[in-house]
Image (tube, rainbow, N blue to C red):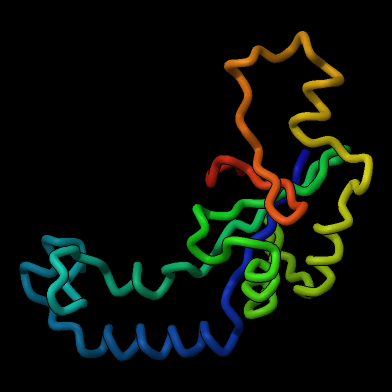
Length: 161
């Protein structure tokens, strides 16, 4: 069994988003076009994509950081380098918000960082060590190419929860 962790915005940022959402709701003109388009409108000048005010409110509000499993080193999700690309920018991103597990329990960002960096170190499994222990379970074409970024075990996938 594994536990997933997420970075969410600060309470202040979420309150600011809520105030913006309420303002937009108050100003929303309920036209037939808006209703038929599921309350989606073009909000960015020059953009042809339609978004709902709710989608804008929740955008990037829950960023998957990674997961831990017994016996395995922590597995990071670098989200295609959208929010961070190395260990330093990862730490800065984490401490700029809040951290919760998949049950919604909030964890101090610094406690989370210590836990994740120390999880099953130094003898925890990663893809290569597991393949060495169980060579008959894998074929060369199965390899998923985990990455090692600044000593962190990083998933090649962004959706592995």
